[in-house]
Amino acid sequence: MTFASRYSKDGSSPNGAALLRDAVIGVIVLIVLASFWPIRTVPTGSRGVITVGGAIRGLQGEGFTVVLPWQKLDVFSIRAEQADIENAEGSTSDTQPVKVSLTVRYSIAPDRVTEVYEKYSHDGNLANYVQTATQEVFKAVTARYSAPDLISQRAAVSNDITSALRAKLANYGAQVISIDMRNFSFSDSYMRAINDKVTQEQLRLAAENKLKTVEAEQKQKVAIAEAEANAVKATADGEAYAKIKVATAEAQSLQVQNDALAKNKDVLELRRIEVELTKAQRWNGALPTSVYGSAPIPFMNVGTGGAK
Image 1 (cartoon, rainbow, N blue to C red):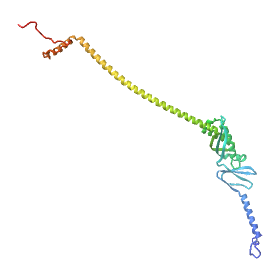
Image 2 (image 1 turned 45 degrees about the vertical axis):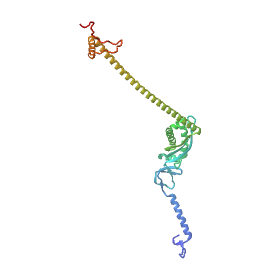
Image 3 (image 1 turned 90 degrees about the vertical axis):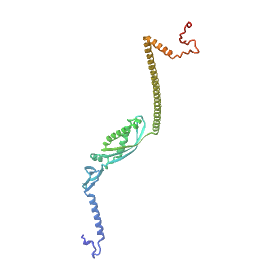
Image 4 (image 1 turned 30 degrees about the horizontal axis):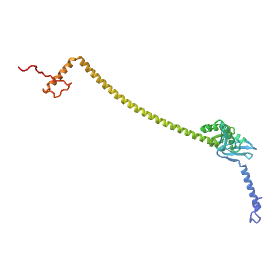
């Protein structure tokens, strides 16, 4: 049918059935073109898995790619994914139940995309596998630690969980980026016991510190008393030593004088005569009015005969 035949014979209007048919044909053509358009796009952070009849036939990188009509393109994410594990349960080596919530960030190794697509996931989401593996790893790691060690060595526990989970998820073609532990907790009864123990330990340390303070104060007082006693003793020893030295000097002086007098008796007699002479020179000739029994009588030269 030609274009002219689409109008009525008088040329006044087009044929309605012909227009409808043309519209339907146009839509069909568009659908066919869209379905069999060979150029597709693989987004950033993804890989394109080409399959034919369900079998993998190729892997495409980011950007444009040509997909033939008999091929299928599945977009597979290799971006970082996140899996939240709430209240994972475990038991310590001393049989204390413990719970923890974790957030695991992971991604699919680019060289393992086809393997993961074939075995585990068509879009790169392994959240279910990560959650199961994390719970198993947490139980295995906590069983190696006692409850006090889990608290005091939390960094070591986190490192052990990370190492074990990396090895575990490598089997699924995933690589661990980071692990965050949240809400690390024990049973209520055990937490109360820990709090009581901490309180008792704090009281014990406070008592020890107080005792040390008292002992230090007592030692300080003893040291001060000993210093004062030593000072008093030193003063007394100094005074006694000075007195001994003075007495010794005086005794030595007297000894020297006695030795000198003993060796020079004439000098002693001469000094006695000098003293008596001095007394005689100073006498005014008057006799004492009172004479004691022991007092010496001055010498008088009285004649026995009368005057001639």
